[in-house]
Length: 222
Image (cartoon, rainbow, N blue to C red):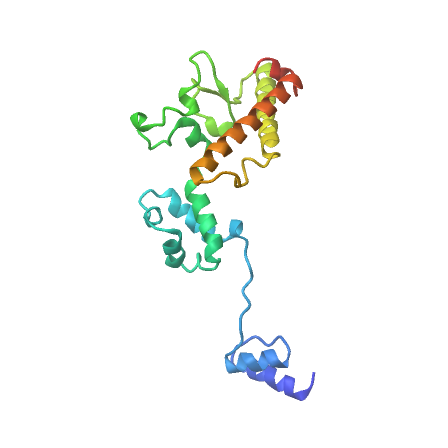
């Protein structure tokens, strides 16, 4: 290290500043013009996402009555991401619902009279039950979940049924129908109709495949 660099470091130490970097960095630091490089953080791990999720779950939160642009400007954590990307995150966050909420036609705060009667909860026949994971606890009259005390046969049946459903969903996703925008159609309404038709066609193909190429004995009972 030459004498000049040593002197620069001594000056930095006296001011309580960092002493690392090359000569240009140290000079910039002394003159107060050093640019701090911001570390890019993925949306999924960001504090912005955590905050938006918290706000979206609060029914009284301001985000429900604002546009993506307005929410983007409302907090510095949101502004850490480009507006066009934030719009996508914002739309997805507000549109997303827990599977249980969709299944039941509402959440625990939704009055029975206000629940969506077209949801699967209301479609299950009286003598039938759905099979679900632990998230569906609390509705034994509609959903069968794993519990202590179940026989090995019952536990094996539930495990096989859940594995089958995961495989079914995996096959649906392999067609990219559920996760990609539909590019056909003349208008948004027309695209939605065609997208629905394509999704139903894929569902039939996958169901047919599972029926005639069963994954396990459980398929004989489902």
